[in-house]
Amino acid sequence: MEINSKEQYEKFIGYIDEYLPERAESLKNMYNAFGKRLLLAPASAIEHYHNAFPGGYLDHVLRVVDLAIKLYDFYETNGMDLSGFTKSNLVFVAINHDLGKLGYVGEGREKYIPNDSEWHRKNMGKIYTYNEKIPFAITSDLSLYTLQKFGVEVQWEEYLGIKIHDGLYEEGNKPYYISRMDSSSLRTNLQYIMHMADLMASKHEYRTWKNIKEGKVEQNPNKIVNTKDNKKEESNKTLEEFRQMFKSS
Ligand SMILES: [Fe+2]
Image (tube, rainbow, N blue to C red; front, side, top):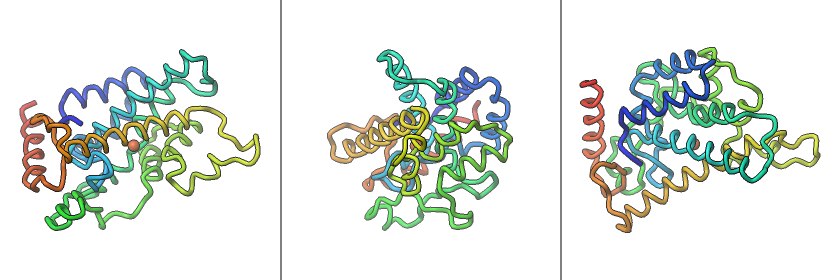
């Protein structure tokens, strides 16, 4: 849960170059179109969800990619089935699974905007609020929409990996996960690994926030976690740090 940095951005781009060279150009075009939103967006709006702080999105995505790779290696080491997909397919899904959380491309079209209501921040943990100026979309739908808009080819197993990454937390995923017939079962473990990686990352992020809130872990001055005890200025200060960081580069 670290303050976003050039290192994190470089790590993100590094994953694209290493695992997805054929699609690197179109992916970079797409992420460039979001500008600094990739670096500043939170992973959620509410403090007790996960990573509801500036830079929380990229921090979360990098954690999911790391875990997905480790889970892939774990499957391999233990002789578990990895047929029907490659590590690159899995990394593609992990990198892009939450893309919809960035909102739509264009000025003022982000999904999460800082909540001006100090009461809601303090009493309900609503650090951000949903941008009412953009059309509502389920995150995975918007992720897939944005990928096609930028001409990024998505294979079927990848499409499904993004679409159902929330597992059974999303009602609409039931037909894929709860199958009555062998023929309608998921054909690969990609989707299960992706869901596990995302669940593990978000629960870790939640627990980190909770431990800081309860004083079990001291907040590192180089790390920012929004809790209801933080003042709004804290977020603004962080944003200013981001601006300075990238101004000087
Ligand atoms: Fe996620």
